[in-house]
Length: 501
Ligand code: AHR
Image (cartoon, rainbow, N blue to C red; front, side, top):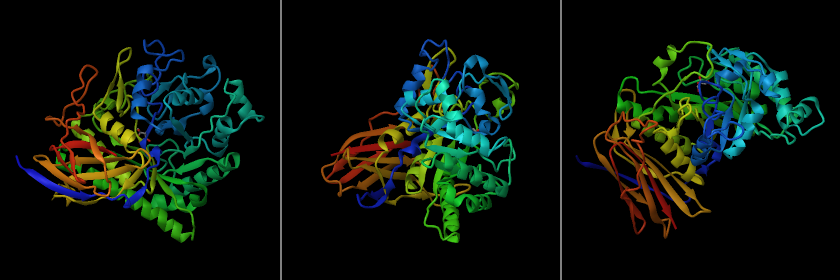
């Protein structure tokens, strides 16, 4: 087994952008056991007086999640938010048509806001533009954000919430380009509705930021035209266009799978181009940013989900059990988001608990960490500050769908206030370790404080409630010799090299 070599130069002044902490956001949908049996399980030994699982809260806090999208997802396109507020005994049970379950409405907007406070996160609220529209959106916004003295704000107060929730970020529907979506629309239909809804919502509360729906994924036949048309309608009234993307290793081709972050990178670049084309077309001074508000690996649970009986409460849906190679791709997806920190200002790992999630729970039993928990936590905890643009030279490989895939996937984040520099790196090589030499001479007096490594001999190794088989260690060998940091990155590994003055 040999060792390949890669080099990079990290300079303080080669800046991409300040990281918007919201790129470490996540997502909780009324789907499967995300809410019921996930964040909320009254009667569980770890439940607090409101039924929130304290063990889950602790794990979410470990991830340092700053923003959580809610309540969907496909769910939101059939949701009546009024069903989930007021006395619990009066809340209706409904057929939930997106995932074909029963929604009890035991948890709704106010309880979710309470929970978000417990984990120190803001709420990224989605409105229903599937079965509903402008009226519903403005009422929900008035209910959440208006101080008092009107029908909906006083209704909130009567429900026990004197202070407004002050929710800043709002999604104008979900995946409205998808034929599966309740109330699916053409780009023109959606663009008109989203713009009129945005206009009215900003009359209610001009301080909010709005996300228009982009494509459900890059392979949608309407991709690109959809974004252009929607932004043509909404440009002056929204701040963000959304992106969603999930990957899977269905062909069991690891080299190709680990290169999929290149496709994500290309997707981001394309959406930036489209947004800027509309900016040019409109002679606008305003720049639209990107909200990558659903991203992750999702494929392991597809077969199991087809066997679930409809009309049950909180069945185990989308319960992907992630393996080690998934954690590597998730690491590269995080690096990709960071590389675009100048335009990607919101991103939500989809999702947070039990449903394609870094955190799992056993009903009545423990909460535990999936493999993907670790790169997400490392990026969220250490990736705050300014993203730098290192000059990288790396060996490359070709795979089925990609040419010139860099073996080294890397970026660096500089936290000036804390005097910390963090290098995130994935070695995609299947056979060899990679000797990385980073020139950081510009960072005088910085010492390696930790070199975290996530590695495993088994690509398909998973964690379970009983055993954490895939966990990072801090035995990486990074050293700094007069500003040249040398580190050997084991084959197929996720690395976090932490330096501090
Ligand atoms: O996150 C799971 C689902 O994926 C969401 O409900 C939907 O928006 C997407 O298709």
